[in-house]
Length: 189
Image 1 (cartoon, rainbow, N blue to C red):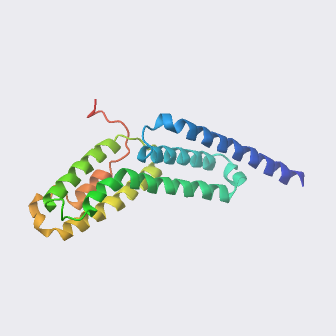
Image 2: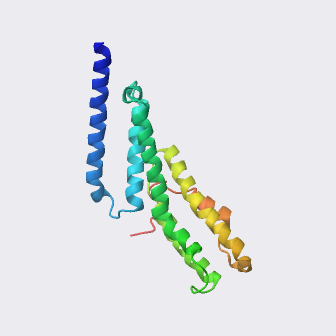
Image 3: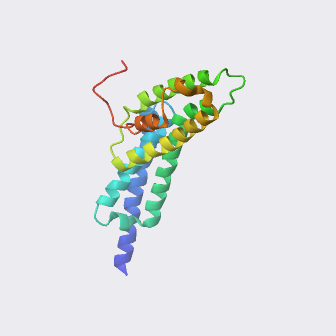
């Protein structure tokens, strides 16, 4: 009866309101993120995560919007996490995937990777992801991209031996510190 129609209408209003807020975020994205790559995806992942957590915390709103609405938002969140990892860390990993011939010695490739890894890590460690669950998911996505590629490179280049600056555990530990926000140790001016 009338209760079901009112509920459906309220769900439509709430869904439209959230969609309007999401469009507003998209419009402001160019201002918030100078590049269209990792920053954009991290920004959107943070905001989708925030909306999902608020919907889950509000009594009855998740059931009002329905499972399909939540599933679509979680799917978008997952896509932004994957796109963040690919755009921010893919170029770092690509240094290891490039064939050795024509680029110099494996030690040079390793040095290029180490420098790129350090730059990216130093840049990304200061970005803030307030939601601890999203922060863990992002860290895992980055680690799953970087650490296996690094291990595979080292296995193919056993002669590197002691010239290896990082162990796989060192990389994983370093990546576990990502997204903590601004630190008191200011490295950039």
